[in-house]
Length: 129
Image (spheres, rainbow, N blue to C red):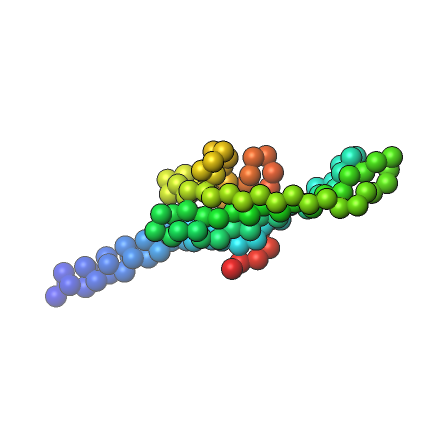
């Protein structure tokens, strides 16, 4: 009888460990909208990444990158310009990163701070799907 209690308790402990390891997995928190704002001497920009599942079985994601920027010429803000880019990225479970299948660029995630790292730039998650 004591052996049954032991195995039941062990099962609860192991299931709790399994749940805590999943909470650190970036895959569960990837979809959403991420933004980054920057301003310099020659321009002002807002960069947005919209990430959604593309094919869950294959582990691929659609990333839409939208950029709005204003050039600064002679100290004057110019009319806004826009760029858009679509990427398909593959999720690597071991590194918990997305990799653009066309260019190889990496997207890393900090689950605790809701941040995405793309190159040297840090994006803040503002919306979940």
